[in-house]
Length: 426
Image (tube, rainbow, N blue to C red; front, side):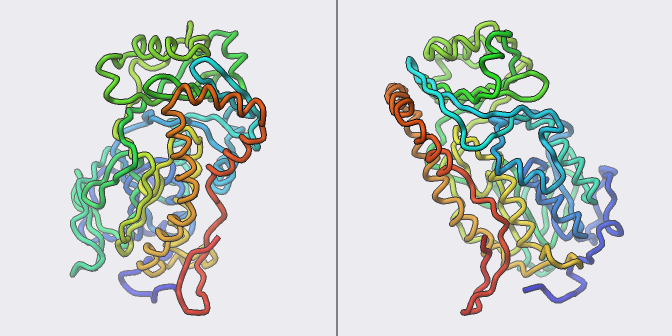
């Protein structure tokens, strides 16, 4: 059900309300954006493009001042690639590398199988920048270097708007999308996962020619003492090496490239073949700690507030579907905010944030659970050696595991059932 038009409502005309380029100065308190998105990553950017292209005044607040690397496997499943095509991104045309097979390497044994669908490897730095570029072209305003300190008021406040305190002053909104990725937005609701004991690292590598030939079109997963990780091709002939190590073990291992690469190579024979002679492309790792794996948002949703990407659910990295979840939830939040079939860009009822969250939870729960069980398996390196025998004997089992960890990405729609209850349905 669409809200009645009012002075508090979106005008349906983005171009008259926002500029594509930000001057960096905060808006006057009297200006109210239809939608403010905290976080300029994949989930927030996808939502912004869907909203701004349909006439909704949309503001993205990104804390980083410029392009930056994020800890991410940079593995985009076929489902995620289709969601990106919807917003005008052709990954292959941008130079993404196809990934058709995967290999699992226990400490001493390995297995290999074909993926059910072809995935793609593409760096988050390049992808996030492309998405922000398209968001601006669609009419969204992007402000970089803005830190959102807290949400001070909600829709139930006397002013009737959501108010954010930022490093550039107050920002007012009719709807709020939280897309802060792996970073917490503590003034709203903190996340508690089932396992937060790992530190994530990411490094782009230039492999030796022989290793690069072997790794092309493959996603290689390595399991070793105190952690696991993956290697996959990305654009420009490079490879993304992303891995997790138990925080408690890092005090003994160290955190520089030489220490970590030596440790992983020592505890996984196949990893040593790839890492030998590999040239790191960053001066330092991209690092993130305290990732709440297994988290699935369950708290009652506040009216008009939508959590997307890792703020909605955190699937273990080994599944390779985090980016699809980000794109799917970003689009679903946009569809809950406005009716894609209408042309006026009016906002739907703010109570649909609860409907959105309930439907996303139901859709993602089986996937998050399956991913978490694989995470538990990967915490036992010797058991992974045994698992390679199973995969080699029954390679089709990988199809089942792959499909059980994929998001249902079909577009949700607002539906009123016979009891008059609103729900989003695939």
